[in-house]
Image (cartoon, rainbow, N blue to C red; front, side):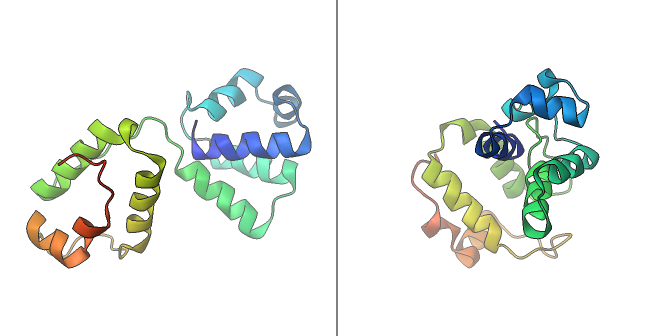
Length: 148
């Protein structure tokens, strides 16, 4: 299930709306909405997200949250590491290999680390893995179920 799918299902459940009812109102198939909820379809379009916001009466922060969840809900992510450091490429590959085995606590810890990372469009320096770990403190804050 994707973050958007989980939120959509929660909204439906809280208001007693069936998949079929929502699909009819949004003029999409129930199968499509089910696939969105279960992560068998790509991220929803902004138009569909807007329709969902209107249907459930979501405004301001709630509407923005749903849009953000939609942006984070591509079930088939591809990471282009061209031009990144070898350490960054290795990290992307390791994450792809182990993400299905990570505990919910580890996933939450990784989210927390990423949420505190400075937002830059492009890295200014290429650092080695050793200096990156030391300067960011990642070696001390990541849970132990990420294999080395």
